Amino acid sequence: MAPRPPNDTGTGGGDLSGFVAALQRALCLGAVALYGSRGRGDHFPDSDYDFVVVSSSFDGLNPLRRREKPYEAWAATGPGRGADIFGLTPQELLAMESPLIWDMLEDGRPLFDDGVWRRAVAEFHRRKTAGYIIAVPGGWKMAERPAAEEPEDR
Image 1: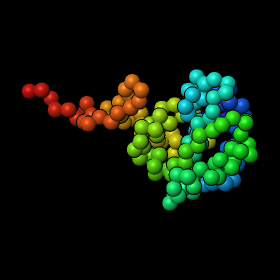
Image 2: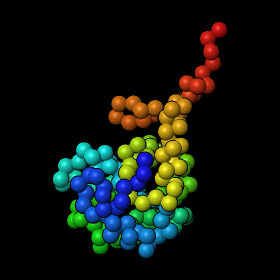
Image 3: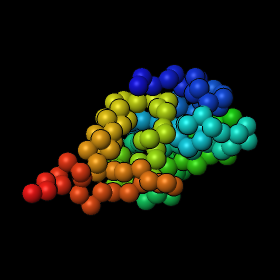
Image 4: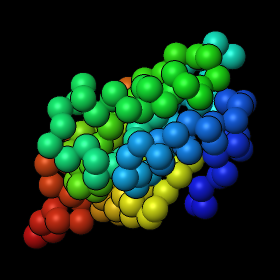
């Protein structure tokens, strides 16, 4: 799927291009994606925004420090609603070792992508198709052994 332009979130979220531009000035930006209810398009008018910001600038920073520049950019440019912003390195996104990251990749709508988001989504779908990641009611689970690797009955 091709990323939508930042001012066309398709989710009634308004113009987010200022937020993306501020992130580009502040970080070595790999991707920005809107996920959660606004990413899925089932949000309410007062719903907050959920973002994942992917940047190599986050290398070596703890999760709280990773949020500083994105929240500054949101405060300066956001549409006046609350936001939850998660910062990942490109390596963490591609390793996708967390069900939260799986949610991001499932529901996320890229607002900016240097290619890392597209690669992660492709790998996520490959893992789902192979049976490594399984959707279950209320979330996800990691298969103990993918169906493709199960021994045949003799």
